[in-house]
Length: 386
Image 1 (cartoon, rainbow, N blue to C red):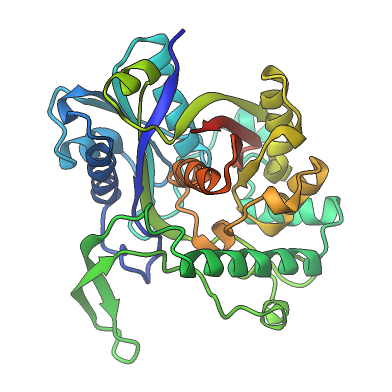
Image 2 (image 1 turned 120 degrees about the vertical axis):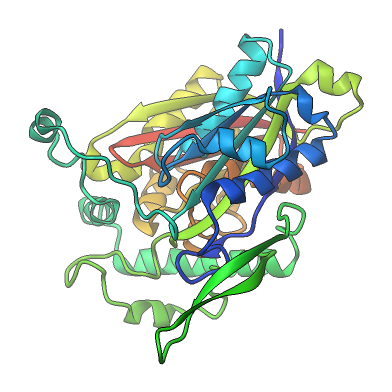
């Protein structure tokens, strides 16, 4: 039986949306860099890459095809871009693995990207019939996070404490160099606005690290932040994921072929599951997707050595962790999107690569990547660490 393994991983640093080093860089450009370096690290011939599957939410057009060409892959390499909101990057990897296992593809790139700076938060119109049946389908995700906090009694203090943890873990991991082997250096052009005159200029910039985190965060500082939606609400700029720009890519190939070439895979894709939930509490989607994934593989929560569950909002990731009874010591151990940042279509690919690399450092065997999805869904992927 064929098995899909991940033989390499590369990503950009995450830059602050509109104010960071990628604020003048197109999605396809960032993704091209990530793909180029992932393929180089894999040591496979670029001509062997059959397809590039990219997750992307905010941009229009086929980012995968454009980025594949920018990465120096030949015109014979095809590309497709998919949109499943915040699970797009994970979905892309699952599809890449399917092509390898079920369709006999030799090498496929799974990746994800988003530039919030260049495009914004998406859109696309409404259907009146859908709006009538599910009026909360287009509810802003920040509002769904407030719904979860109120409905499931996730206090503001609990959310802020968790957010501080994310910042502290991420800062410690960054200081220890735990992201260094993931990140590629990208030279780019950055737009700068003079605070006094508002004049704009373009300057040379280098993004070679994650720049969104705030290592000096304190609980007192978080407590002072006003809820975005006003009094009585919960979500603040301190307990939600940060808008950011970035790209990540992995190279997927068949296990026996990798072994024949003497490659050392990071791990193997074992499976994934998707599930739906009410749109107004989309943040709890993982509590439905994860049990489905584990049941299909005959596993329990306690069998998983390491968890990466996207921190869209503190309220939802706390609810999911506690509802599923996941050990906090195995959960988002180097911080998450609250500190690191969340380019929507990229995050699933970043979480996958990081889980495999951190899993190896810790001697973990089984890792799960999961996230909530706008519109009312959850996704979860199971990987084996080599």
